[in-house]
Length: 422
Image (cartoon, rainbow, N blue to C red; front, side, top):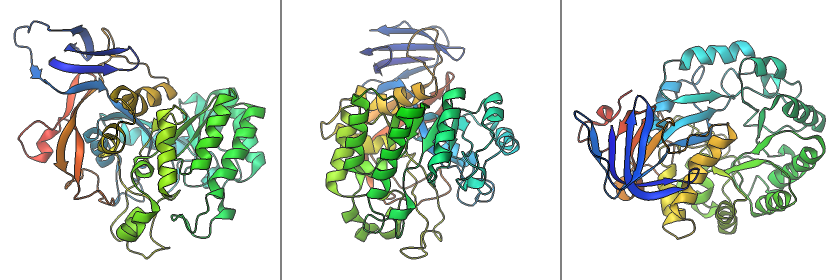
């Protein structure tokens, strides 16, 4: 396969030029500035004006399945991810039932073994996500688990968090933390009833514990200006950890809740324009490491239970790149290479993956059109719970390539399902 006349951007290798990429046997054979000569019978894609980058990695998705397969399955979630330019994801463990044991983790591995997307399945930090007793960290390490999380719930008890940090330091686990202290929350999902102190206070606590006990933490879905400032100061002092922001918190504010209602109910809630700008600035200056979608499918019925009973969360894995184009690139806040760093390079690094666009490396790539406009009127997810559905979007994923195979090709004129080769 030959990708011709593309703008190749890779923050890891430092490549940023127009040229060609040849792929053979699942790997990159050659990358040149300028042109390569086509070989006999070689499949050629002329991609003039398009961008080729390392494919995206989402460190925070909910693929439901099991007792919530009406919302999403690993298969449908994978297709939505691939459409969004992703070849790797980390799936959260707050399924029904929760994934809190070796046997349940192995059940997931059986489910996903033939899915072309690489899915790092996380396991719960505590049994039943009750925040009281830790899961079998030693056993989970032996079977290759990388991420431990009770996402959806914070670790309220400090002694439990301390023990988790010690074991994270010992075994090298990523502890992915949902930081919302419930004592500050009257009703989750809205800024007016889920005080920002819920996030700020528990981040402050966990950064102090991290400094004292070590470990490896990733702070999920930041929502407030004060949290960004806390994290910026901690990183300047030399503390090592990572953090995420969602496309939702980069795009929406609390003023839009009146228009979109429960579709915009998320945990933590979207807050003020001042908070949104602070999150964008945190991404720009490197305080925030990555964009992670928190892709959270729900049925239409789940979102129509009223203001306080409706489920929190929305789908976003298909539109993350478009949001980055509209709210970051087009507003001249960050150059393309830094956006790719936040969608690809940094999340890959968190999970120990280094695949630069270079000869001999795996061909996990995404083809992008930063200027393409389209109507987001079809979702490959089982769910449609997003305010963006039906909206005109800017910036499009054209192809997703994994191990040298084109899994998704939006440049085809075929029916939507025929755009997939997986």
